[in-house]
Length: 377
Image 1 (cartoon, one colour):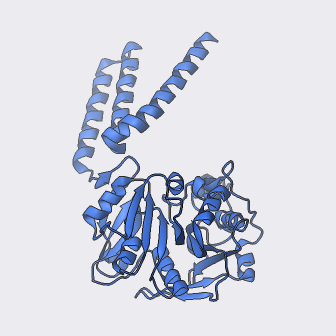
Image 2 (cartoon, rainbow, N blue to C red):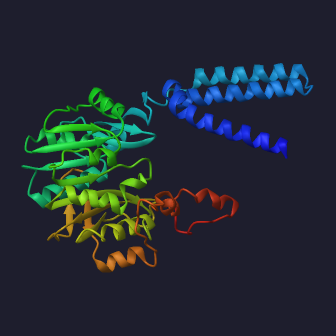
Image 3 (tube, rainbow, N blue to C red):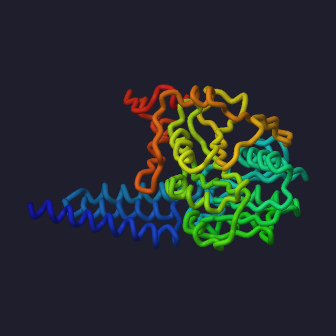
């Protein structure tokens, strides 16, 4: 019993030191790749010591050390840098996207996902679908950008705020971005200028939201705080939406960029159910011509105090995109019998709700299908 207790205590202490030391010291100093290398070397050294003290063959120990050293050396020679900048939050890399977009452009990749694309051909084309949708909807809703006051939750490469800033028509463009390194990357490596009416506040979206001037109200609030394929849970709860509602003008729009399964999307259903508790009108928009054969679907969720008078949108970009607002029948068909829950601060299982869509698909390899059969084609 004492031996087991000591082993458990040492294990718990090691876990605590590992979590705190990695998050607060190793990753900021060495980066993720450097931290993994250090941990691998440390574990190999400890393994070698245990082998030696247990009476293991020293020649095998020396041979293993030589092989490990050669493997690390070879990896350092062959491996290409994954990140241009590795911040305390993200791996940032600028990439050429002309082959992807079909026009001269470059993009910002964050943790392996393309978040922003900047056109280099002198046009204002928006390749990222969510940016294109928000730009098209806002211009259609307002008849242009004149006098617009907008708040962006999640800045990324600042593609859309910069586009609107260059119009010289907007009143205020404020951005909440958690990572100063992302803003610095955008201003140094892309054609982005942070000057009035564009302003960036660095901090967590919710904390930064509360710290805004008390009298600040917005005609558009856009929640684009996506990390990979998921969203921070504290930015989709009813308590957060009530903060949004207090900052929204009577004729304002609250827009959420959401990625989920093309059929029976559980996270989307719960988000819509949550928004309906506080907003008079909640709309679901999706792109026409994108069917269930795709692994994922971009949805534009629009919450407002008053209903709109249109249900179709066409992108002004050269990229042919058309969106439709789902009516009651199409919404019912999309959700089917999908259960919906109200997301609250004490229960907002975003990752679990999104698990129906690709993240657990690997379980089918061993016939452990814990997800629906249509989750990830």
